[in-house]
Length: 318
Length: 122
Image (cartoon, rainbow over the protein chains, first blue to last red):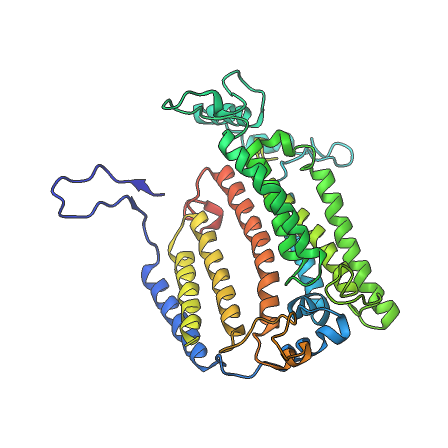
């Protein structure tokens, strides 16, 4: 672990080092990094550059974008059309990552096995691995965590720092941020929310649901940062978000599988095409994009809030 | 001169790799992995670039041109831009997995030093 250095020397001969961290396996790393740099650098010099013709798949996407999908945005056509199956796989990679975060961040539950499983071997386990006694550090950490988790703990936590006179130290913790930040967020939030939905609605933005979902996560995070957890508690609940996310995933599965059933290939378009640059242009691309908005927005929301709310698991190892 | 971008991506990748190899602070190792991931975004976007090209958008073609003519003209590669779009979102989720593992390790072993985490020594 790093340690801060002492005060700067008055001689001024050596620059002040603010942090020193030991470097491990210096030579092995140097050799491996140099070898990687040489290998990749050689490859980079040989690959196609800015004057090379476009690959056939890119030209194909540009060709079919308007006539076959009614999309003026070939990137969107690639994401939800030509390479729709790949996006389908990536969606479930995202789902797997979110599930991993949920499983890892969830605190340990008492095992609910069949008859007496929780008690089997408990005596031997205690003999082999006696539980640690809580020391002063642990007691202080537990108290601080309880204080942090409980919004109503103690009388020393004001709602906002607004009442504190200028020039005095601000309170250590408050439920919300200052009036300046809150006003800024109130102005930015509607714009951000509309921008996120607009990215999906018209069907001619690159990626549609992917950036749209990330923007909607930004809306949630800004509200949380500026106004405290109480304002988002009604929406940011595991039961609600996980349900919505799985509904988004189910909608994607249905969209893709119906292509196989009705048109003979996964991610084939089975919806009538509307005129380009309208809200329904793109056929299933728009449906896929909307479902992706739900999937990405809620999936990233679950992952980020699970990480933010990750408490210490104090239960004994059993 | 797009090759400069390619080499910058290699430099970024190697910076991340060296952080992963030489640091023992788990947060810095995750930062190194994120750097390696970012280098692929730079690489793919640079690979999509074509000299003098327009963005792959078939909207409002210049005077006297049709959208189909635009599609056959000099445009940037939309496929690589698609790779980047999805990779960024997946990257965020994967980094969240890394960080949640790091938080659990830190809580369990009360250290972020990979060298001190007994089970990971080897």
